[in-house]
Length: 253
Image (spheres, rainbow, N blue to C red):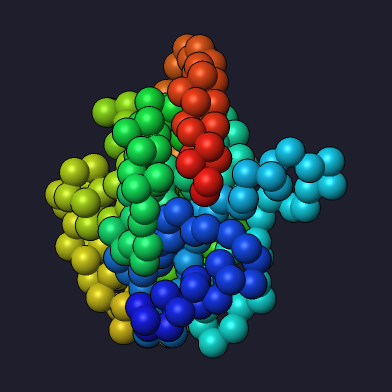
Protein backbone atom coordinates (compact mmCIF):
# COMPACT_ATOMS: atom_id res chain seq x y z
CA UNK A 1 0.00 0.00 0.00
CA UNK A 2 2.95 2.31 0.56
CA UNK A 3 3.78 2.09 -3.16
CA UNK A 4 0.15 2.80 -4.10
CA UNK A 5 0.13 5.90 -1.89
CA UNK A 6 3.48 7.11 -3.24
CA UNK A 7 2.18 6.78 -6.80
CA UNK A 8 -0.99 8.68 -5.88
CA UNK A 9 1.10 11.50 -4.41
CA UNK A 10 3.18 11.68 -7.60
CA UNK A 11 0.02 11.95 -9.71
CA UNK A 12 -1.32 14.74 -7.47
CA UNK A 13 1.91 16.72 -7.91
CA UNK A 14 1.67 16.43 -11.69
CA UNK A 15 -2.05 17.14 -11.96
CA UNK A 16 -2.09 20.09 -9.55
CA UNK A 17 1.35 21.58 -10.35
CA UNK A 18 2.43 21.41 -6.72
CA UNK A 19 5.37 20.04 -4.77
CA UNK A 20 4.42 17.82 -1.83
CA UNK A 21 6.75 18.66 1.05
CA UNK A 22 5.58 16.05 3.55
CA UNK A 23 3.02 13.23 3.58
CA UNK A 24 2.05 10.93 6.44
CA UNK A 25 -0.53 8.52 7.81
CA UNK A 26 -2.79 10.40 10.21
CA UNK A 27 -5.52 8.11 11.61
CA UNK A 28 -5.87 4.84 13.46
CA UNK A 29 -2.98 3.22 11.58
CA UNK A 30 -0.63 5.93 12.85
CA UNK A 31 -2.16 5.74 16.34
CA UNK A 32 -1.47 2.00 16.42
CA UNK A 33 -4.98 0.58 16.68
CA UNK A 34 -6.21 0.02 13.12
CA UNK A 35 -9.01 -2.46 12.44
CA UNK A 36 -8.63 -4.92 9.56
CA UNK A 37 -10.86 -2.70 7.39
CA UNK A 38 -9.54 0.71 8.47
CA UNK A 39 -9.00 3.32 5.76
CA UNK A 40 -5.59 4.77 4.99
CA UNK A 41 -5.79 8.40 6.13
CA UNK A 42 -3.07 10.26 4.23
CA UNK A 43 -2.38 13.94 4.94
CA UNK A 44 0.18 16.13 3.19
CA UNK A 45 1.59 19.66 2.99
CA UNK A 46 2.31 21.14 -0.44
CA UNK A 47 3.63 24.31 -2.05
CA UNK A 48 2.80 25.89 -5.41
CA UNK A 49 5.13 27.88 -7.71
CA UNK A 50 6.07 31.29 -6.31
CA UNK A 51 4.01 33.29 -8.83
CA UNK A 52 0.82 31.67 -7.56
CA UNK A 53 1.09 33.43 -4.21
CA UNK A 54 1.20 36.85 -5.93
CA UNK A 55 -2.04 36.33 -7.87
CA UNK A 56 -5.35 38.02 -7.05
CA UNK A 57 -7.39 34.99 -8.12
CA UNK A 58 -5.89 32.33 -5.91
CA UNK A 59 -7.72 29.04 -5.50
CA UNK A 60 -8.55 27.11 -2.33
CA UNK A 61 -5.67 26.33 0.02
CA UNK A 62 -6.57 22.64 0.37
CA UNK A 63 -6.58 19.66 -1.98
CA UNK A 64 -9.29 17.11 -1.19
CA UNK A 65 -10.23 13.89 -2.95
CA UNK A 66 -13.14 11.45 -2.55
CA UNK A 67 -12.40 8.33 -0.51
CA UNK A 68 -11.48 5.62 -3.01
CA UNK A 69 -10.24 2.06 -2.46
CA UNK A 70 -9.89 2.64 1.31
CA UNK A 71 -7.71 5.69 0.63
CA UNK A 72 -8.69 8.99 2.28
CA UNK A 73 -6.22 11.64 1.12
CA UNK A 74 -6.05 15.43 1.35
CA UNK A 75 -3.51 18.16 1.89
CA UNK A 76 -2.88 21.76 2.97
CA UNK A 77 -1.08 24.51 1.10
CA UNK A 78 2.12 25.74 2.77
CA UNK A 79 0.64 29.12 3.62
CA UNK A 80 -2.37 27.47 5.31
CA UNK A 81 -0.02 25.10 7.13
CA UNK A 82 2.08 27.94 8.54
CA UNK A 83 -0.95 30.01 9.53
CA UNK A 84 -2.43 27.01 11.36
CA UNK A 85 0.91 26.34 13.01
CA UNK A 86 0.91 29.89 14.34
CA UNK A 87 -2.58 29.19 15.70
CA UNK A 88 -1.27 25.97 17.36
CA UNK A 89 -3.53 23.68 15.35
CA UNK A 90 -3.48 20.26 17.11
CA UNK A 91 -3.77 18.19 13.92
CA UNK A 92 -0.58 19.72 12.58
CA UNK A 93 1.41 18.60 15.61
CA UNK A 94 0.02 15.08 15.25
CA UNK A 95 0.91 14.85 11.57
CA UNK A 96 4.43 16.13 12.16
CA UNK A 97 4.89 13.33 14.75
CA UNK A 98 3.39 10.53 12.68
CA UNK A 99 5.37 7.25 12.81
CA UNK A 100 4.32 6.46 9.21
CA UNK A 101 5.91 8.88 6.73
CA UNK A 102 5.24 8.48 3.00
CA UNK A 103 7.33 11.44 1.86
CA UNK A 104 9.52 14.15 3.34
CA UNK A 105 11.79 16.85 1.91
CA UNK A 106 14.61 19.16 2.96
CA UNK A 107 12.09 22.02 3.05
CA UNK A 108 9.94 20.24 5.60
CA UNK A 109 13.01 19.32 7.63
CA UNK A 110 13.70 23.06 7.93
CA UNK A 111 10.20 23.57 9.32
CA UNK A 112 10.37 20.68 11.78
CA UNK A 113 12.55 22.38 14.43
CA UNK A 114 10.11 25.31 14.55
CA UNK A 115 6.97 23.28 15.11
CA UNK A 116 7.22 22.52 18.82
CA UNK A 117 7.86 26.18 19.65
CA UNK A 118 4.35 27.05 18.41
CA UNK A 119 2.58 24.50 20.61
CA UNK A 120 0.08 26.14 22.99
CA UNK A 121 -0.85 23.74 25.78
CA UNK A 122 -4.23 25.30 26.47
CA UNK A 123 -5.33 25.02 22.82
CA UNK A 124 -4.25 21.41 22.61
CA UNK A 125 -6.00 20.56 25.86
CA UNK A 126 -9.34 22.03 24.78
CA UNK A 127 -9.09 20.18 21.46
CA UNK A 128 -8.51 16.78 23.03
CA UNK A 129 -11.00 17.31 25.85
CA UNK A 130 -13.72 18.29 23.37
CA UNK A 131 -12.96 15.19 21.30
CA UNK A 132 -13.19 12.95 24.37
CA UNK A 133 -16.38 14.55 25.69
CA UNK A 134 -18.14 14.39 22.33
CA UNK A 135 -17.29 10.77 21.63
CA UNK A 136 -18.17 9.67 25.15
CA UNK A 137 -21.51 11.45 25.06
CA UNK A 138 -22.45 10.10 21.62
CA UNK A 139 -21.12 6.56 21.63
CA UNK A 140 -20.30 5.09 25.05
CA UNK A 141 -23.46 5.52 27.12
CA UNK A 142 -25.29 2.37 25.95
CA UNK A 143 -25.00 -1.15 27.32
CA UNK A 144 -23.36 -2.28 24.05
CA UNK A 145 -20.91 0.02 22.26
CA UNK A 146 -18.51 0.00 19.32
CA UNK A 147 -15.10 -1.11 20.56
CA UNK A 148 -13.27 1.53 18.52
CA UNK A 149 -15.11 4.38 20.25
CA UNK A 150 -13.34 3.67 23.52
CA UNK A 151 -10.09 4.60 21.81
CA UNK A 152 -11.56 7.84 20.49
CA UNK A 153 -12.18 8.80 24.11
CA UNK A 154 -9.28 7.24 26.01
CA UNK A 155 -6.60 8.43 23.60
CA UNK A 156 -7.53 12.13 23.82
CA UNK A 157 -7.86 11.87 27.60
CA UNK A 158 -4.37 10.44 27.87
CA UNK A 159 -3.17 13.13 25.46
CA UNK A 160 -4.55 15.72 27.89
CA UNK A 161 -2.70 14.09 30.74
CA UNK A 162 0.51 14.16 28.71
CA UNK A 163 0.12 17.88 27.93
CA UNK A 164 -0.70 18.77 31.53
CA UNK A 165 2.38 16.91 32.72
CA UNK A 166 4.90 17.89 30.03
CA UNK A 167 3.52 20.94 28.14
CA UNK A 168 4.53 19.32 24.85
CA UNK A 169 2.54 17.79 21.95
CA UNK A 170 1.44 14.24 22.79
CA UNK A 171 2.90 11.30 20.84
CA UNK A 172 0.86 9.69 18.08
CA UNK A 173 1.27 6.10 19.27
CA UNK A 174 -1.48 5.03 21.63
CA UNK A 175 0.80 2.51 23.35
CA UNK A 176 3.19 5.28 24.39
CA UNK A 177 0.35 7.25 25.96
CA UNK A 178 -0.92 4.15 27.76
CA UNK A 179 2.53 3.32 29.09
CA UNK A 180 3.14 6.78 30.55
CA UNK A 181 -0.32 8.12 31.41
CA UNK A 182 -2.73 5.29 32.29
CA UNK A 183 -3.21 3.80 35.76
CA UNK A 184 -1.55 0.35 36.03
CA UNK A 185 -4.77 -1.38 37.10
CA UNK A 186 -6.51 -0.29 33.89
CA UNK A 187 -3.74 -1.35 31.49
CA UNK A 188 -4.86 -5.02 31.22
CA UNK A 189 -8.41 -3.93 30.37
CA UNK A 190 -7.16 -1.59 27.68
CA UNK A 191 -4.76 -4.22 26.31
CA UNK A 192 -7.62 -6.71 25.95
CA UNK A 193 -9.78 -4.06 24.30
CA UNK A 194 -6.95 -3.19 21.92
CA UNK A 195 -6.66 -6.81 20.81
CA UNK A 196 -10.41 -6.92 20.22
CA UNK A 197 -10.40 -3.68 18.25
CA UNK A 198 -7.57 -4.81 15.98
CA UNK A 199 -9.22 -8.17 15.25
CA UNK A 200 -12.76 -7.03 14.37
CA UNK A 201 -14.18 -4.66 11.77
CA UNK A 202 -14.76 -0.97 12.40
CA UNK A 203 -18.35 -1.75 13.43
CA UNK A 204 -17.35 -4.45 15.97
CA UNK A 205 -19.14 -4.08 19.32
CA UNK A 206 -18.47 -4.94 22.95
CA UNK A 207 -20.47 -4.75 26.20
CA UNK A 208 -19.89 -1.51 28.09
CA UNK A 209 -16.77 -1.78 30.26
CA UNK A 210 -17.82 -0.24 33.57
CA UNK A 211 -14.32 0.43 35.04
CA UNK A 212 -13.31 2.26 31.86
CA UNK A 213 -16.49 4.31 31.83
CA UNK A 214 -15.88 5.28 35.47
CA UNK A 215 -12.30 6.27 34.63
CA UNK A 216 -13.51 8.33 31.67
CA UNK A 217 -16.18 10.21 33.62
CA UNK A 218 -13.78 11.07 36.44
CA UNK A 219 -11.02 12.11 34.04
CA UNK A 220 -13.33 14.36 32.01
CA UNK A 221 -14.30 16.26 35.13
CA UNK A 222 -10.79 16.59 36.56
CA UNK A 223 -9.15 17.60 33.28
CA UNK A 224 -11.76 20.27 32.59
CA UNK A 225 -11.10 21.79 36.01
CA UNK A 226 -7.35 21.74 35.39
CA UNK A 227 -7.66 23.42 32.00
CA UNK A 228 -9.92 26.17 33.33
CA UNK A 229 -7.30 26.99 35.95
CA UNK A 230 -4.49 27.45 33.41
CA UNK A 231 -3.31 30.99 32.55
CA UNK A 232 -3.60 32.20 28.97
CA UNK A 233 -0.42 31.97 26.89
CA UNK A 234 1.13 34.76 24.83
CA UNK A 235 0.82 34.70 21.01
CA UNK A 236 3.85 33.35 19.16
CA UNK A 237 6.09 35.36 16.83
CA UNK A 238 5.20 35.38 13.12
CA UNK A 239 8.71 36.22 11.88
CA UNK A 240 10.29 32.72 11.82
CA UNK A 241 7.31 31.46 9.80
CA UNK A 242 7.41 34.43 7.43
CA UNK A 243 11.13 33.92 6.89
CA UNK A 244 10.75 30.22 6.17
CA UNK A 245 7.82 30.78 3.81
CA UNK A 246 9.74 33.37 1.76
CA UNK A 247 12.87 31.26 1.73
CA UNK A 248 11.04 28.23 0.31
CA UNK A 249 9.37 30.36 -2.37
CA UNK A 250 12.62 32.10 -3.31
CA UNK A 251 14.25 28.71 -3.83
CA UNK A 252 11.66 27.99 -6.52
CA UNK A 253 9.51 25.55 -4.56
